[in-house]
Image (cartoon, rainbow, N blue to C red; front, top):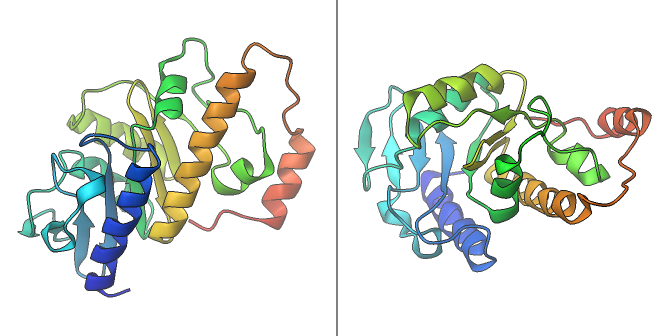
Length: 212
């Protein structure tokens, strides 16, 4: 994907997320890995109104080399890329149901959501909870980096999901699947549920290994 196409894809998919209520106001951010650095949505920008030409560009050593100033979560993105060399894109949202799950007391911090559906297992698998840190805190990036070697998706406590993918589309689709599973989890929370068994999960992972 050329840089021009990557800029256009970020704007197009960002608007899609915004229009469907998965991000709002100036929340959330998207990044894409290029051959010579990263593209990142600008700080304070709305995903519903991104100008492809103003999307920030950073060099691999973290210098801002083009576009508007990058998201204040830039260190979070670069920390995950550093541990996942095959990741081509990262999506971070404040999507309502995922954030709600990250605010619950008593969830399993090692794996926040149960395997309710096959597609959740296929796109997310295991979702650890990262302790709360203020947005943009260097300790938040360090905490994400600690988990990123083993997990392409994490949930930030009281904040939202961070999901890496081989492509931008992969990262967006996985983030959407996470949000829908969080919604299911909250709807079913007071009901007796029947998640997939460990054997069923293992079979799904064997047939459809996550590639990022």
